[in-house]
Each structure stands twice: as C-alpha cells, then as structure tokens.
Amino acid sequence: MFRSTAAATTDRIEEPRRSAWARILGARPFLVSSVALLLVALFALTQGTVAIPVTTAAAMLLDRLPFVHLDVQAPEAWQRILFDVRVPRVAAAGLVGAALSYSGAAYQGVFRNPLADPFLLGVASGAGLGASIAIVSPLPVDSYGFGWVPLFAFAGAIVAVALVYGLSRTGGLRDNATLLLAGVAISAVASGITSFLLLSGGPKTFPIFSFLFGGFNTASWPRLLVALPYVAVGALVVYVHARALNVLQLDEEQAAHLGVDVTRTKIIVLAAASIIAAAAVAVAGIIGFVGLVVPHVVRMLAGNDYRRLLPLTAILGATFVILVDVAARSVLPPQEVPVGIVTEIIGAPFFLYLLRRGRAAGLL
Image (cartoon, rainbow, N blue to C red; front, side, top):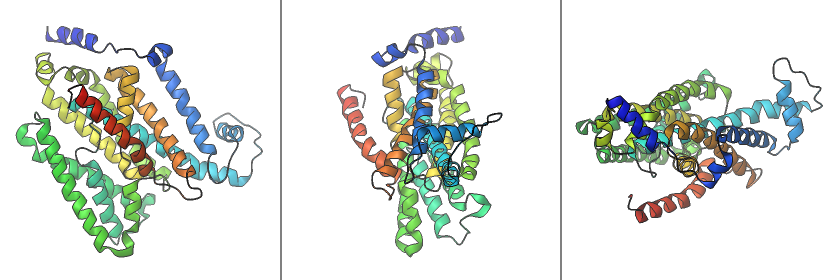
C-alpha cells in the first residue's frame, strides 16, 4: 500500500516543468549534453601556449584508439604536450567538475535548499588542513607517484565530515540546522589551524595557497586513478537514492508517511556525497561554487526529477569546469589564474541572485 502510494506520488512530483530549452531538446538532453562535453574537451586540448589545430588533435586522439591507425603528421613535441599534459588535465577538470556538481545536487536534495553546496559540512576546510599538514611535514612530496598532499587532503575532508556527523548525532540528523551549525564549527576550527600553519611555516607554506585556490596544473593519471573509485562508488550510492530524494522534496514528515526512512536516507546520501566531494578536492584543491551553480542551472533547465537531474548535472558540471580551466589558462598568458578564483568570480554573483530570489519567493 505504502509502496504504490509513494510511487504514484513521486510520479506526479517528478514531472518536470519543461523550460523552452527542455522542449527544444525533447528526449535528447543527455545526447546533446554529452556531445557538448566532447566538443568542449576537444577544444580545451587545443588551447595553451602551444596551439594545436583541432583536426590534428582529433586525429592524434583517434590514432590512439584500438584498431585505428591514422597517418598523423604532427611534431613529437605536440604528442608529448597533448598526451602527457593536456589530456590528464582535461580529464581531471572533467572529473572534478562532475564530482562537485553531482555532490552539490545531492546536498541540495537532502537540505531542500538551492543554496546548499558540497562544502557545507567541512569538506573544504578539512581538506585544506590535511593538505597543509602534508606540505609542512617532512614527508616526501612525490611518494607513491601521486604525493602525500592529495592523500592528506582526502583524509582531512573525511575526518571533518565524520566530526560533523558525530557532533550532530544528538539530533539524529533530523534537524538540518544542527548539522549545518556543526559544519560551521568544524570548518572554523580547521580554517583556524590552517591559518596558523600558514603564518608559522615560513616559505615552505607557499604551496598551501595553490591548494586553497584550486587548479589543475599538477593533474596526473595517478591522482585521477586514486580518486576515480571513490567518485564512482559514491555517485552510484547517491543515484540509487534518487527516488527517495524526489520524495524528500515534499517534506520529511510526508516522506516518512510514504515509506522513506528519512534519517537513513540522509545519512547515506550525505556520506556518499561528502566522499565524492573529498575525492574531487584531493585532486584539484578547493574550487568553490561549482556544486552550487551547476545543479541549480540544470534544475531550471531540466526539472526536479533527480533520476534525470543527477546525471545531467555531472555532464554539464564537467563541461563547465573544463571551460573555466581554459579561461584560467588564457586570461593572463603565460601565467595561470587559479581555477578557484575564476569560479568565485562567476559563482558569487549567482549566489547573491539565488539568495535574493529565494527570499522573494519565501524559501529562505
């Protein structure tokens, strides 16, 4: 009885209100978004201090596919630049963009608030502290091929989120305010310790700034391969709960009446989303506002059904961060602007827009 009632209710609430964009695309948003991602990725591979023609870059990529052999006339330097530098960088930007956007969509679903993002529960500050400890420590930088910094950053993020969960256990995670206040407290402590390390560590702490601003200039395949399993498993866990997230958009009490275990769903989704965000931060440092901006834009374009929203958010999030990385490399050549600075310039006005819109609608 509860199951059939829940199914009927979610079928009604999952009917997205079609925007003009969605009506134009019809049933093909995933195809169009995927093609856009591929085109943007190819464009990004051609940009840099050494410009590579699009046709040549595409031919070099196709030549690496199994059973494909093309007579590509390209300098050896182009081969090294493309496959050793740009392909890992674009792959890292895509993975991080998809992970942060997907995690942000999950957070917004749990908190039922468009202003939620994946750094609410201390992921960013915990990762920053972990990276800072690794940088000022005597540990070798390049151990195991990917360095201690991403490992410490990931551990710091997970510890921070675990502390937040521990502090909010008295509310059983039913009270979102308690969870958020715990996140603010842990973030403040972690940020304070990171600031102390910056002030006391001398010149050795300069790499900390690079991590705190975020970027892909140190992207490598080993880092991606370490982060990918966490992102993939976390994304799968969140997607399994997509229908429950749809029901949660009604109200927690109504969701419970419809058969959803609200507390269990919130714990699992937030834990999985936090792991996804922690893995992304470990790869590229702290890149803010991606998990806030992209899910909300996708929601305006494609509706509120999380079964569609989550994968579309991942695709468009990857596209967005790849484009931002291209912009960061191109604004002040040959110097690179940290990607996190660019996303803050884009995201802060959008955040203010959401804040004003939410207050006008009585949602905040």
